[in-house]
Each structure stands twice: as structure tokens, then as C-alpha cells.
Length: 301
Figure 1 (cartoon, one colour):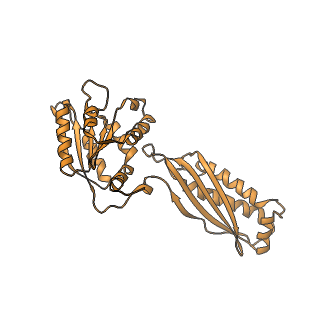
Figure 2 (cartoon, one colour):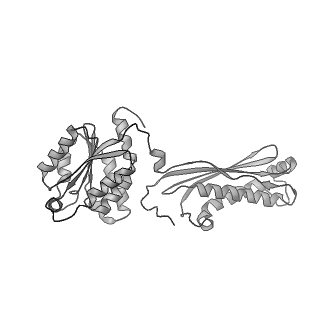
Figure 3 (cartoon, helix red, strand yellow):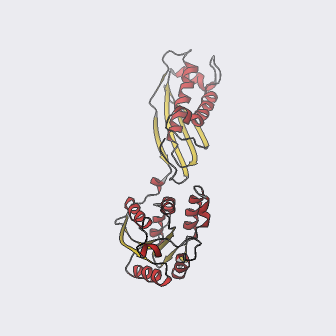
């Protein structure tokens, strides 16, 4: 199975459609429930709901999902019964296969219940009409990339005793988004060094500053306190999103004191010092966090 553990949970929806073709009189009998096998539409509706929930048992690479809703609609056409299924779930992967499976199973049940009274019954094309949810729904078109800077705060790295991994990981990760990293610097865990570097970048028109290190509870972890003195407006929801995402993967995420805020129009995000913490935190907020920039210019959601 594909690894989806790094994805965020969002509301996922999908709508699938198919048709069952038959004689007009056969379809009218199906709507009335006047068939040797009984009520056609209620049986097909229940079959669709069951199929949506059973999709991972039928499609090899589908992930088990907690289905929140399965809506099945029937519409009588001239010589066809149109079947449309909408599936909803809050999860880390889409529900298009659930919708397609549900629609196909509804059609198969209609076919089974009508084939004894109509030799011309046939199933039409199965198609996905629409799907929503996931990061792709929240990506925005921008004319040029946002300008960013990465700051590594570490005594050991600045002294050459350790090699930086987290800062380089941030730089590499930003290549996936409309973000251009113009600066990458390493400073010791000293308030003055951190503050001067961040303020200098704010003055140069940098729109996004990502720091790594100094968000824990160690005696030298002072990045959070330093950044709090710099920012004009704190944005607690972003830091909370990172912690919630991390908490579902490691219990130590609750010990992170990451803070996020604005200095003028510059977004400052303090990330953990560990490469794993950085990777999870970035997965939790990107690219959705970039919606902040049009907002601070007066744009809405």
C-alpha cells in the first residue's frame, strides 16, 4: 500500500455515476418495486452503502476509511436508470474508489433483479464525476514565488561539531511549493544573534522565515522566547496544527513550544530541531499556510 501517513486529514468527497439500460416498462416496474425479486431501488441503495464500506476488501490498494456518508440517488431516463453515488469521509486519502465501487454494486444489483424480466438489460459506463479534498484543493495560483529564509539555531552546528540536517531539509522541502529560499544561515543559540538575523531579513522583504532549533525545553532552547519578542501578531492555530499532527505520530510532540507569528508582513515559523520534527511540521501546514499571504493583503478565504 502507498504510505499516506504524512498526509493531513481533510473532508474528502467523491461522486460517481453509472446507468442501467432496459425497456421503459421494465424500468417503471423497478421504480414501483413490481418485480419477482421485490423492491429494486431499496436493495440497490443498501448494496451501494455496503460496497462503499467494503471497498478496501475488494480493491487491493485502497486504505480502510471511516465512511461518514453515502448518498445514493436514482433518476429515470427514457431507457435507463441513472445511478449517482456521493461518498464523504474525513481522512488522509480520497474516496473516489469508494464512490465508484458503490455505484457499480448498485448497478449490479439492479441488473440482477431485472435480468429475469428483461433480456435487454445492460450496465452502462461507470465514471467519476468529481472529487474534492486533500492538499490539491487548497493550492493557489500565484504570479511569483514567495521569498523565504531558513535559520538554523544551534550552538553545536554553528561551532562545527555537528552537521546540519534540519535546515537543509527545510530548504529541500520548499522546492515542492511556490517558495524561493534566498537565505540559509546558521547561528548559535543566542537571543541577539537570532533576533538580528530575523530582523535583517524582515527589512529585506523576506516574506517567510523558517527557523529550526530552540523550541524544546533544554537550557539553551531560547528561540521561542526570542521570536515572541519580535512578532507583532501571534498565529496560534499554525503552531497547534503542527503539534496535533506530530502528536498523532509521537507523544513527544506535546513538548514542542513552537510559536508562529507575523512581523509586519513577514511570517515567522519556529520549527523543532530534529529532522523528523521538521518533516512532520512542514507536512502539517504546507501548502495551506501560504493562504496567509493573500489574506494579509486583504483577500478572503
